[in-house]
Image (spheres, helix red, strand yellow):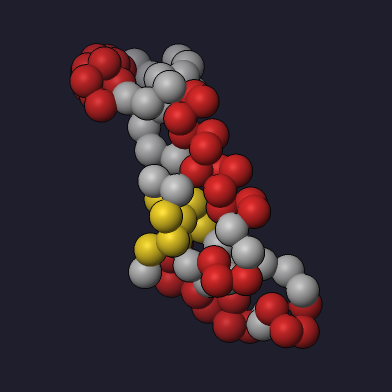
Length: 86
C-alpha cells in the first residue's frame, strides 16, 4: 500500500518541477529495541525473528543512506537491500 502511495505522490510532484526525490525504503528487520513495548507471544516472535534474520543497525542504515543518495533514478521507487526495485 505504501509503495502505491509513494508512486502516486511522486507522479503528483514530478522531479522536474520540484527538484525533490521521493522514494520509499525498507531497511529490513534490524536488531534494535523498537519493539521493547511489545507484549505476550508477539514479543517472543519478534525476538526469534531478530535472532535468526535480524540485521545489525549498521547494515539496516546502509539502505537508508543508499536511498538518500540514490539520485534521480530512485524517484517514485522502492529501495531495499541497497538496490532500487520496482
